[in-house]
Length: 418
Image (cartoon, rainbow, N blue to C red; front, side):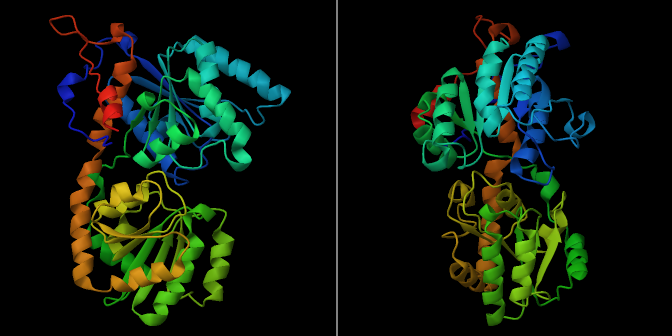
């Protein structure tokens, strides 16, 4: 199923003339450690703008711990609830307070993100009288009936009975949700992550400046990886592959952009392999454009993905890409690079060495520039607007001359095509 079928913007209702008639949507999320922590954090802030451009009034509610997220950063009102342990007496009391607050705000849509919010939102939302409950699935690690998450998976499947729809960010995640959570196929839809292409155009000046900062010579080839330093991102595999590849060609240099709990392990591995001069560990970066401009080859070696923002950024920069064949990577990559199996440093090293050929790099880079247009932010904006307005009460919609709703009903078409 493709979530990027052509959508006629004229079928979407215009923003309501009166602010009082603008549907209110609440984005409920567990916590957000930092804007650089992961894709969902950035995508949620992007979704605020998407909701506003589609004539809705968004607000964010965070269950815990996200002091850095202010209305100025989010672009909308932000409410914080300090709910640390849900199964404690204090936690249950806080959930009752959260439910009363949601009811007082009279939201028309409640959309949840991350495990706890996806589990709780259907019950809280219904108790608060919110007419539309939407879940979000963005990775393949959500609670399931398998293994250690069996109980959580069972509880999630019960909560799902109260959900009006679940939005996944790839076909892989949609299929996983359908199979593992036994969720109804006709209530699942896919909206790929979007990127603002105009903001990711390569800057030749930035390339020269960053390469000089990193000490990358004119004849060196820089292999980059933009990832959180977490085990699931396979950053230890990246370091091992760098050690193998650099032995075959001393021109190869490496940069790892990101931070996280694996940083001490990565630093130890760099020292173990003697890569202090070849591999630059630069920490997290909110703006990665200068690093993208400096790269010659881009790598994503995760063990699991939903739909990677880093992969889209690589493509927008016109880089040849090596990615693991997990989650939605195959859907995104198309002809823009090479897919390898996860947790295989030898395969990654060999793929890097194969891209020493400038002709191959140019071919993949040109394909990336073509493929990325499938993920222009405007496609996500139109698709999300369509989903929201299809669910909303008719009093919020515009009507045509025949009295029919102007909101389209393509969701069943998407589900049938799948």
